[in-house]
Image (cartoon, rainbow over all chains, first blue to last red; front, side, top):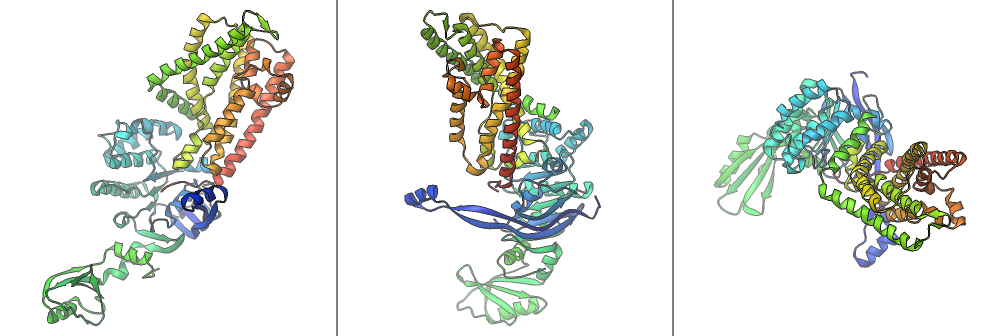
Length: 334
Length: 262
């Protein structure tokens, strides 16, 4: 395996058949005798390649096709067409041999046994993956420390909190020291502290062990703190593939001023800015502009010259706002 | 193979966690035995042979069928539940053969059932019913070999029906019908001896009579060498045929798998 591309995907397509459900009693009868189907292209001609040791964030709105892509990459789903090569394997064709090389964490599906403790489940994993005793011990110690599993590793999984279970699940997926790890929404439903622990763990592992990682999430903070490269998918198609910085760049010079005025009417006409009403409050306005075109001071001066200002704040748009605009088709990048 | 045995061991272990289940299991098996025993006792009403079959042969046949019934464990909702809840994703991520893993887990539970459920029942039953002893050591060994092959036949039929969940999502109804048919055709309810000759000759070509009835006949030493050889050959042929069908179902199914949720 060359150190060049660990993952190579080209022209990937997957279509699902979705049953249309008619409503009501007649509809229910109709569903039984004449079910109607509709085809949905979950993944539509997606191509990308990922180098060894790279860490790539996969984002897109719900139903964009992220998870479907990850499931195809991990050999669970068969693609309708297109090529996937990961570490020299064709995942869905060589599933058994292939999955020994990867680790997958599904935020919404635990691989731990509900009635057993994480430690019991780890023992089973040790046998299934034939992990040598020494490696198993080392990994277990290391993950216990880094993920802080010590307090609950011997409790039945059903008694764990979501955050604890998630951390235990991450350790489970990594016990066999996989070369490639897929995280599918690993931070879903987890509190800030828990998220931080998971992020820093993932980052450490990527740096020290040179593990190739794909990370799907809805939380842009996850991406900002861990990934350098970003792939955005929407409606089954790849919208963007490039550095995270590139996405930010277009927006670093954008500023948003939120102002509350004392008296009505509020009449603003400042050139090179966009003015919008804020939350239905007639006293409030949101002014968006680019500092390359007009200085913040000028805008402030223009506001204060004409009106009495009760409150004012200046913001940079977060990555969330950028992504929202990309999803909504307001901006095109790449 | 060691990792598959691990699946059986885990299943066995986790079964021991439910002690109440275990006592009820014995009671359940014993009750079934008593019901059959009483019915046939009334039918025989003092006669020692009906159609050349003695009462103790019938009783023994029941006990063996019961024992096999509990040993031949199969978690018939396994695939359906995994597909419905989408947890099949986690199963497919394990570097093991899915079918073998399923088989070993079931075998682990079967072993538990035999040790903690059937054996106590058999001991209690032997106290009040007159049972036939195996006709010889070789017959007993052949019987056990035939039991194992019979289990693989039965298990594969179950797997084929289960694998229809890739298309149907719910196979509970099919599984129930399948089990009733197998129990009738395999002679678990009514020993084959009492079936009409014509039906018996048809059933002879199906995989069913090699599941329960062949082990019973071997145990009682009722088969000549030719019949033993033919019987084993038939079991092996059916195992091969069912394997191919099961493999086709699995491969087609996995291609159209939709992982539910998330």
